[in-house]
Image 1 (cartoon, helix red, strand yellow):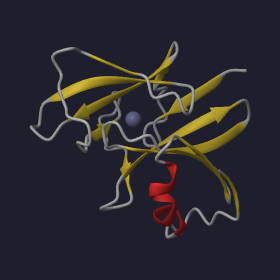
Image 2 (image 1 turned 90 degrees about the horizontal axis):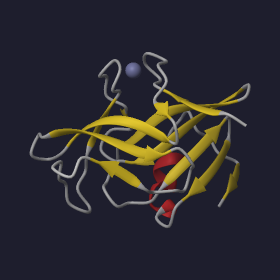
Image 3 (image 1 turned 90 degrees about the vertical axis):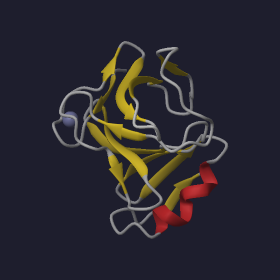
Image 4 (image 1 turned 45 degrees about the vertical axis):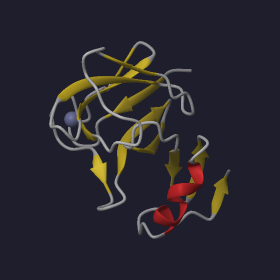
Length: 138
Ligand SMILES: [Zn+2]
């Protein structure tokens, strides 16, 4: 089964091989590419050894193709991308805080949550008009 990840802005493919590629910026305004694992709940990160950020630091995420911001939701920002699984499209949201393991796969009013910090953004998701989740899998 082939899963693809797309930028919600330009619809370009963000996944190459096993990884999903993002352009990021740390608090010092250094920029670097980050490769996240394409399996939801796998928090393996690949980056250049000279691109540094601290655990707990909030990174900004951009599409590496169109360079638009992928952040959503104001202050409690999450990254939002599209996941296309055969014919179904999901929104995938995840924390942009380094080391924080919280990922959400959303379709209609169904949210599937991953990672040991998955509880942190549930209230935020509840307040999100587009994601009234009734049937949540935790
Ligand atoms: Zn894009």
